[in-house]
Length: 184
Length: 184
DNA sequence: TCCTTCATGTAACTAGTTACATGATTAT
DNA sequence: ATAATCATGTAACTAGTTACATGAAGGA
Image 1: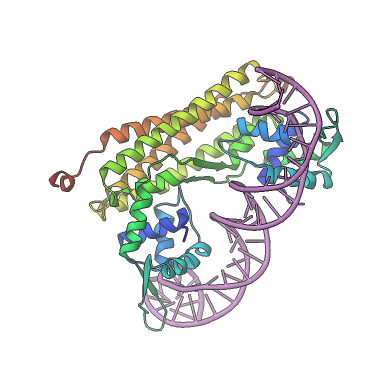
Image 2: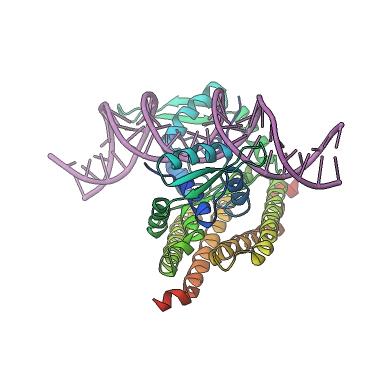
C-alpha cells in the first residue's frame, strides 16, 4: 500500500496517543493546520485503509450509546512512520496564495487596490500568528517534554507569519499614487 | 461562468501581452510559480473555456506548418480581471510542506534525523531564493516600468526564502543529542 | 544527424473540499 | 429547552498532476 503525506499525519498523531477520527481533526486543526491541513473527508476513509493495512488497529469505546472508535498505531505503523520521517531527501514547499496572486497583477487596478491588498495581507498574517500564539501557550503546559519539536515548529509558524505581517505592512506604507494617478 | 484562480492567472498574463498556451506556461514557471503553479493540463482546457466565455479570443499564427494559437484578452476579460483583483477581502495563504511535517514528527526518529531535515530544508530555501534572484536580474532589464509590482512580488519571494533558509540553518545548529541519546 | 526547444493536447489519476445526513451527550 | 459539542461517515464535486502522444523548427 502506498501512503500519502496525509496518511503520515494520521500515523504521526496516533504515535503520540490513541485517538478517534474526531480527535485527529481537532488536534491537526491546532497543530499541523498551517502547513498541512486535513478534512474529515480524508480522515475517515484513510483510517479504514490504515486499519486494513495493519498500520493501526481500532477499538470500540462508546460513550453511552454514542459510538466511538479509538485508533492505536501498531508496531508496523510505527516502523512505517519512522521510515518516512527518516527519509531526509529534499521535497518542495508548496505555497498557494490567492492574495499574492492579486497583488502580482494589481498594476492593472491602481495603487489604491494595491495598498488595500497589502494591508489586508498584513492583517491576515497578524491573525494567523496570534492564533498560533494561543496554541503555543497551551502547548507549553502540556506534553512539551515528550515532543519538544512540536513547540519548535509552532515557533517557526509564529515567527514566519509575524515576519510576513511586518513585510506587508511596510510594503503598504511604501505604496503611493503613480504620477498618472495624481494627474487625474 | 465561474472562474478559478488559475483562470485569473491566465487572464493576468494575457493582460500583459498576447501569448500561446506554451508561452503562458514558460512565463508562469518563472513568475507565479512559487506562489501559484499551473500545468499544461489546466492551461489548454482553460484557454478553451475562456474563449467560449468571450474573455479571450484566439488567432492562428503558425510558424511554417507548426500550429500556434495566440490568445488575446478581450475588454470583457479585462473587466473580469480588474473586478477580481479589486476584491481585497481576506483569503487564506495555504502552505503544504512535506518536510515541515516530517520535522514536526521527528522526535520519534532522533536528533540526527531532525538536524538532517533542518539542513536539507535550509538548502532547499537557499536554492529557491537563488532561482528567484536570477529571474530578478532578468526582470530588471525588461518591462519593470509597465508592471512594477512584478518586481515587488519577486522581492517578497527572495526575502522570504532567504529568511527561511537562515531560520532552518540556525535551527539545525541548535539541535543536539538528547540526554537519552548520549547515554547509548 | 540528432538533440533541444517550440507547440498542442488528452486521459487517467490523485488529492482534497464541501455539503449533507444522522444522532448522542453535555453545558447553559 | 436548546444550543454547542462530540462523533461518524459518504457522495458529489473541484482542482491539479502525470504521463503520454504527436510532430515541426532550429541549432550544434
